[in-house]
Length: 165
Image 1 (tube, one colour):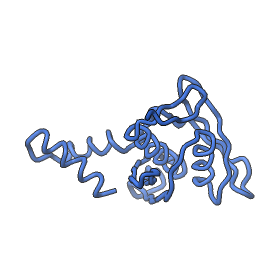
Image 2 (tube, one colour):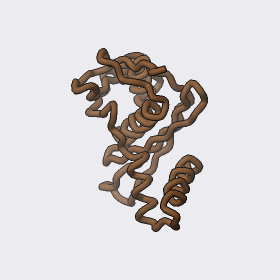
Image 3 (cartoon, helix red, strand yellow):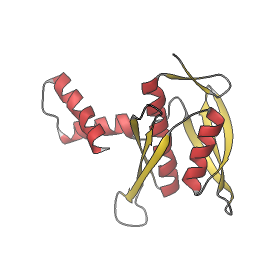
Image 4 (cartoon, one colour):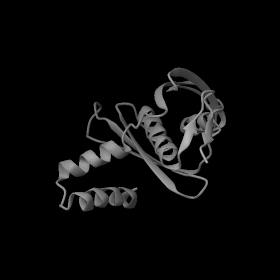
């Protein structure tokens, strides 16, 4: 993710013809990676069955709320599978990292998720929330939304993603 983010910062710096201040670099990070919620907005999630990690995720897309269910080898994998299966979305190699932003029980969690599109391009997202699982899901949605934006996949009226080519 550092390399990808570095190119984003360099692009802005080159365009503005100046060295960027730390707050400007932070703003670029937040704008381009953190809790990206369009075209698919994460609303909520719940675990339906802990035995085989079945989850339900509620999202907002095309002015409608939709609940999707999926199973996987863990909670984030189940949500990823629900999104891929129900939205006809394909990616591989989900990369996941997380840590606390501060010390203490009131600290926010930050999660980073990378996904590989079918053409091999890696897309990164970041999620920040007080709950580690929610930050992880927000990071996944951020990465998916970046992939949709960059690959020009259109979100269809029936909640299926279609390529605009």
